[in-house]
Image (tube, rainbow, N blue to C red; front, side, top):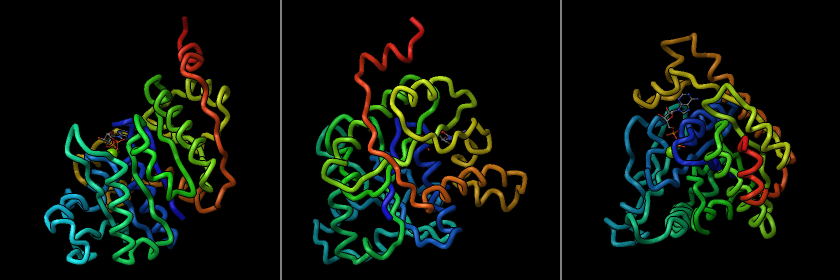
Length: 267
Ligand code: ADP
Ligand code: MG
């Protein structure tokens, strides 16, 4: 199963992805997480450091795929989750879609792409061109992370449009929205009333999640010394269980920009 996690920059995709990956591994799955954000810190809380990216490794070997070994690019993370960072094109040049394509190509050459029962793509969701939609070519399921604010719901709506478009030619389904870092959900509710899709979880702002980023640990690792954090892990286990139940999911239909502005403003 391939899962793509999308959402606006800074919304909590990598945090959520890392913890869902471990939750899936806890349920017995063999999991690979691929960071597809040029920020290349997707797997930071899994490994505790910034692993070398595929693009950097390819460049250092002059794009000789045959000179690259699995251990050059696949790094073991906490809880048995394997980690890859695609990396980014040079800032202001190149294409994010190309980077994702090269990553999948290399993983196929290494026979790694088909080795895992779950591959999770962590993708930035300020979708401005087809490149950012590239992981949708491989995904069976998509999750969108959002808070209760206009900007992340606007990004969610753009991602929704990309999913609708890709689902015409690929067997891709949206599992639903994951609310993050919010205890309010009035705007999320308004959005899903206008653009029907499941809300599969809403996580509040939790200080220990912010701290986990600084410590370079996932919540599952932190709970070892702080058992009171168990309730946070339960959120991620619940999301993992929903994914593993193979939900039917939906092909969503985005709402026009102007309608979204009206819907989410009080004017
Ligand atoms: P993204 O991958 O979408 O850019 P990150 O996962 O890196 O975002 O998260 C950005 C910051 O927000 C991190 O410092 C992270 O620890 C923090 N964060 C994410 N989710 C929560 C939450 N539910 N409560 C508190 N802080 C959070
Ligand atoms: Mg990230």
